Amino acid sequence: MQSYVCTVCAYQYDPEVGDPDSGIEPGTPFENIPDDWVCPVCGATKDQFESE
Image 1: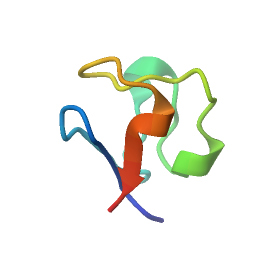
Image 2: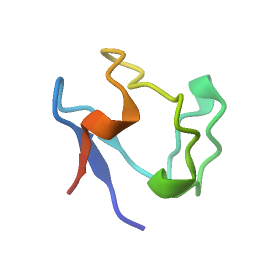
Image 3: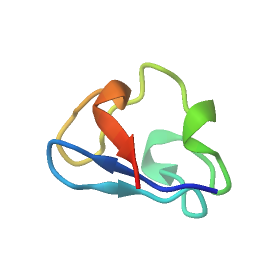
């Protein structure tokens, strides 16, 4: 699975880890995250992430 990086704050979304604090289970591909999810560090929207 591919990692994605926030272009605002450089937070890296790792699909193997997910984002449990936001309800995103480990093993969730970035493409399967809901569109209203935001960066847990800076609040950037999903479209502000780029594949790494």
